Length: 431
Ligand code: DCT
Ligand code: MG
Image 1 (cartoon, rainbow, N blue to C red):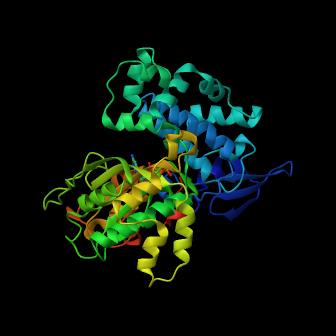
Image 2: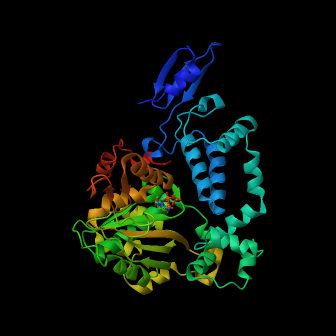
Image 3: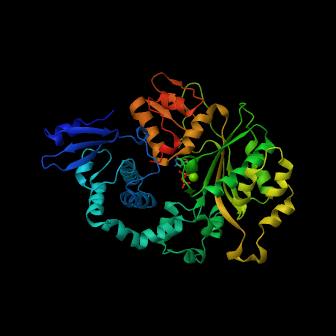
């Protein structure tokens, strides 16, 4: 359970060692001061990481360095800082001294330097000066526009564009996503609450039930891991009968569009085929499902309405529809969400990023595992599968490279078992 060999050899040097729990051992040192020394397994998918982070100052610093590396198109450095931050997130207690970190995995020289600075000075000088840098500020502002990635932002910065005002006046032709991103910039850079996510879930469930009875909607992403806030809302839709889900996305999107719920949407088709002789893995695990990236128009009082709705008995569907404002009649719907007088600050709706994904039931367990996150937890699951088990994991399938066959699973638990991993519930995948 605990790998403390490094520790007993290098540190305890004859002092009594007491195992406290899975991630901590206590050493009685010669001077009688007790220090908790942490021990964690090296892959994030072997660890339980709840939302109760005891080291937020350290993880915020490391996460900012990770973000800056990703925004600067340095993914390798980004992953290294993400891994270091994830190790700190999994620790059961606040770190108070560098000795406690001896032998922990994923802490490179640079991360250790940052941690030391925070422990000794309360903040990392490198992180503080990065936050103030013109380059970082411009990257944050520009990639904050939906549809703008690190490469585009870097190109604009090289042309001297650092602000939204400069972007608007640059004469650049923006694509449809970027135009919507600029238009709804403030809303999309404001966090989405759990109540707002639930309100959108209610709308999505209603439309899915009406176009394909029996289809199931699952809230995935950060909200499934128990987060109270997120940058978007992620849904996975399936039907218990294989094949029934075909054509579902276009019907759902048409309905939402006709009711004025979508400010922007882009749907991509399912292009994944399981072939008999090869794993047929997509280049990324994200892009082979039928998927709709959208910007939802959510009425501001929708969370409140959703709560009221939830309290009503099931047999009042007719009544519910009238009460909730989820009319199937276009006029009444658009009336409800139109801006009276067109004043921005009083607009009774907000824009929210919503991702809809449709999966056939045969791939559902892999899809729900792949879409629950966190991003690092997913990356580590795939790395574990490849490096430790000679398997290829995606959000469609698991392929055993030695046995040369796909391993079937109808639940997340079965996938963890195939991978020889202890099951980690969604609320403990917050790496
Ligand atoms: N995902 C992944 N790899 C990516 C992008 C996403 O594995 N490159 C998975 C993990 C999380 C899930 O998809 C949803 O993605 P996000 O919405 O970006 O993540 P989140 O955890 O839901 O974050 P937030 O709460 O901020 O929305
Ligand atoms: Mg999300």
